[in-house]
Length: 376
Image (cartoon, rainbow, N blue to C red; front, side, top):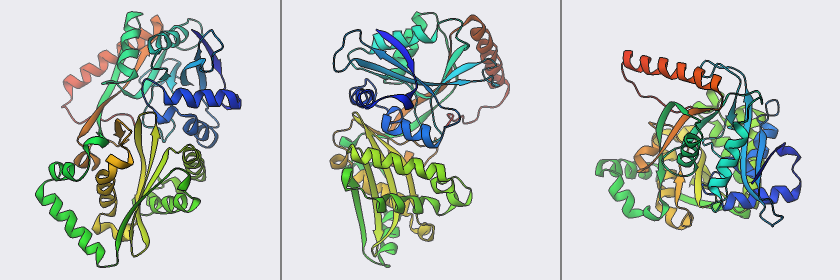
């Protein structure tokens, strides 16, 4: 196994095609490490602080020579990690980190990356991973292989995120998941909505997605509190440009889905969803502020759950990308455990993170427990 460092923006078309094929056969599905996501993110969101890329490759010249991809950024000292270190790449619109590894070569890939990252004299003392899934996928294996090398993991925080198994969703699922009172309330809201015109729901995916779908989504996501607080995609031209390129690339690959809720031919709620490997990822959502009392965003999500068995039937799960306490926890009964922490790759790094870990435990002992969220 060979590991080398490259600039992801300098990859040629053949290398990009290899990266895309690896994404599809990766041990853990992660759309946030897809070339269709990463390249627009670097270009539009992080041009001044781009990541470098580690490639793990077979020694032979086979068609699928590439068997591992990791993206990392160099970071200066922080209050958590007061030494120069790396962080697994995460744009401001990324909700999962990790690495891509060929499912048939996952252990050699992880060992190859750890061997590279633990080299001395490279200027960093550890690697931070934010929103790393630790109950399945690459996370548990990464931490176990690191421990075997004497590389300790220092965890800052962890949380749970809502998830959904599409094959278990549908009408019966909604009957069981939502209380009778909640179902009655949602039916009442839908009736109020229907007083203004016919209510329709539609999911559009792949090459059927048009620029109109993208622009309608951006407009809806910009209404209400997101636009008021400047956190919507359209609040920053770079974020809007990133989203446009992302959806166009994913649509061409047949891996983008936009759902829309309409009343009287007006789209009042929209969600964007991405597919990678054997998983789907709910990405962004928006709704028309004028219809807030009818909960169009929730009604749209209800329809997605109702149609998930056919819409995402080939996916093992859908990652909500949501924070703890989100309304998605009411609708989706699955959970993923995510952690934010760091691997210490040098003696000095272990001392620094060990001191922080001790202070963190002391604080948890002295300060009353409260809900702690991941780093999203």
